[in-house]
Amino acid sequence: MANQKAVSLTQADKLHARKVRLRWLVAASTLPLFGIIAAFGIAPQTDTNNIPVSTIVENLTVPASVIQADNSNPATAYWRDERIESGDTVASVLDRLGVSSEEIARFLRNPEATRALAQIRPGKRIQAQTTDTGELLWLRHINTAGTLLQISRQGENFAVTQQQAALKTRTVMKSGEIRSSLFGATDAAGIPDSITTQLADLFSTDIDFHKDLRRGDKFKVVYEAMYNNGELVMTGRILAAEFTNDGQTYKAVYFQQPNGKGEYYTPDGKSLKKAFLRSPIEFSRISSGFGMRYHPILKQWREHKGVDYAAPAGTKIKAVADATVAFVGQERGYGNFILLQHSGNYSTAYGHLSAFAKGLHKGEKIHQGDVIGYVGSTGWATGPHLHFEFRIAGVAVNPLTAKIPYTLPLSAQYRPIFRSAAQPLLAKLDLLNGTNLAALE
Image (cartoon, rainbow, N blue to C red; front, side, top):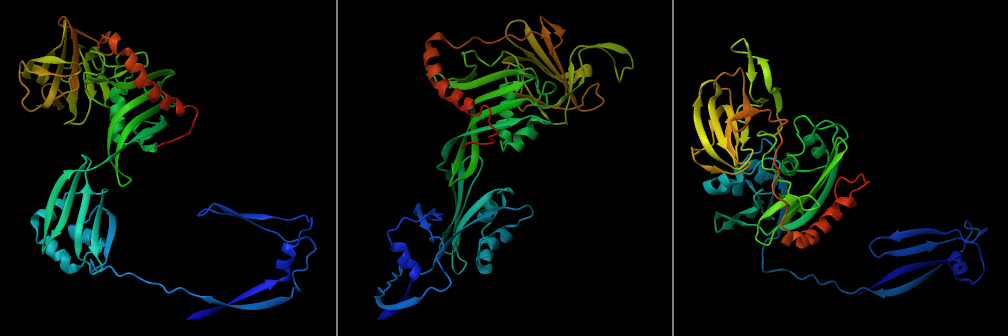
């Protein structure tokens, strides 16, 4: 069947076709979908109020529309995405996903599926596919370890499977400025806490993040992030970083040697890893320094042979260097006590612990950064804190001022490879110079 279409032609349309030299007033409109620019104009002094209109009627044939029915699946499937909210139950999540009440009851009768869904933390996202009748076909979630959890329909029941997800790795570039604290600045820049912790660890041998931070300090960081369908799943390692503290700038790039060993180096190939960390605890305050002090329990002036770090009970304590455990157990006023023997004539002591790391024993070999115990208030202590001593040849020295030895620089045979790997990473840091960019992905 043919339809009729009315087309109006005006005198203005005819004037538009005349080839005369006229001054036009042009308005341009861009159509983003096709990238076309259209121009419209009216000649000056044209009367637009009394323009004769003529009508032309044309017969246009409308092609028949054919809709192909998909008979392979009798029910239409819908893909849905939801965020787990605080206070959610398994039933409320399934309801928001469009699952029918009968199907929710069937799901809840499967303990394994119910337990798997209930363990997803608030703030995380899940995806699901349902039919138009509310039947659940599958439900998926990827955790921060990159594991894909899938709950799939199998007949009248549900099966739970887990496997490593296919993630896409991107390089993320971000920068920030210290206003009040490191975590406050990284939160403002949208940097995950896992990267913030790495950043602090990376520069901890040059910057004491307990007391050295200044308002106006700046940082830039390039790191790995893993995504699934455009959603951030987990973060990897820092690839390059720069931190300016009190006018002094420190840089680091990650380099993996051909033998598989990876470490952080300065741009000129010096290792950032010192033999000793500056602090065995992250982000705590010093409650008592090294030297003479009035003992709060003994009520007398005594030499304080270490530094006290105030921290909540249970805070992790790290070994400041590779070592062998020389002693672990009770030691008079120290309470729960650990003594580590390092290379050369260096040793470190840790007192007032609430507990030791599981299985820690005398003679055990441990590495720098390993958790050896937890903050407590055992022994002569008025509150939870860590008493930390740094000893040279058995004599306690101030750990805040002691000269800390460096490790050896990068081997000469690896330097050409290092320069080739470091150059593009340093260029990414330079890209953030003089900008207010919070993120480039």
